[in-house]
Amino acid sequence: MADVGRWIAARRVAALAGLLAVACTSASAQTAADFYRGKTINLVVSTSVGGGYDLLGRAVGRFLGKHVPGNPRIVVRNMAGAGGIVAANHLYNVAEKDGATIGLVQDSTPFKPLLGANEGRYDADKFNWLGSSGPETSMLVVWGGLRIGSLADLKERVTTVGAAAANSIPAMYARLFNEVFGTKLRVIVGYPGQAEAFLAMEGGEIDGYPSVFYSTLQATKPDWLPTKKIRAVLYYGSDRRPELGDVAYAPALVTNENDRLLVDAALAPLTVGKLFVAPPGVPAERLAALHQALQATFADPEFIAEAARLRLDPPEPITGEQIRDVIRRIYAAPPRVLDRLQQLNMGGR
Image (cartoon, rainbow, N blue to C red; front, side):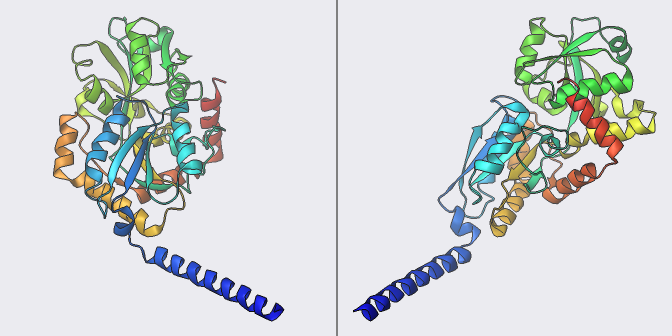
């Protein structure tokens, strides 16, 4: 009887092993189209509703599904908090790694750990960067009723600017301008997003905001610059924008080589733009399908027309590999530059 029992147990183990082998073979044979057919892709946007990231995320969500094999449904979910770190932590540590969850995160997300943001529980190099709609231009703006019209004015008087937190990217940019250009910007924290900061500017709580995307302003408040409701005093990014006329272009004003290296590293987020990302561990075939679908979406004439209708910048797509190259270049910057950058970021704590 003991021999019979052992034989039955052995048969059960063999049968279980066979079932596992079949399951593994079936899973490995499943194509991206097989996986996505009839499924929903959750697109996590790391900001609140109504801003530039949200507009872009929802616009992409309306077209991405037709370019993903199997044509899944796309559902946008907003997850704001801590300058995008809440969403980044969720994507890296909590979200399923099967390709059914992707994210649209702030341009600063890859660089937060480098800047000493201990809240960021992720390795930027292990994220699967899918691409970006293009580089961004940002502006330091002030309320139009104030007697502030130039960089010289910002050097002469204390100007209050809003930010979400002391170690947020807008706050860091304010301290960067103080250090490099001698401005007297004083950061007031507690404004979760740009929309809240704009309300505070209207109410006279603060004078301005140190980092407003030109594309976001065109999409959400297109009349504010032309009617002088707000005034751009300084702008910055990888390229000049003729539309901003005689507004001072920050990178062109830097003359010291050490300052130039610092500004280059600080502006890296604008170089990569609004970032689409997948968690680490997504199967390679699904990852490739997502990357190709995103690039196809940016090239889709219907999406381009929708972007124009929403007053978003025309897509200048950046690939995931290009994003990774920028991230690695900044992480490899000279230690003296990174130390200085981290001190600027932590300076408000």
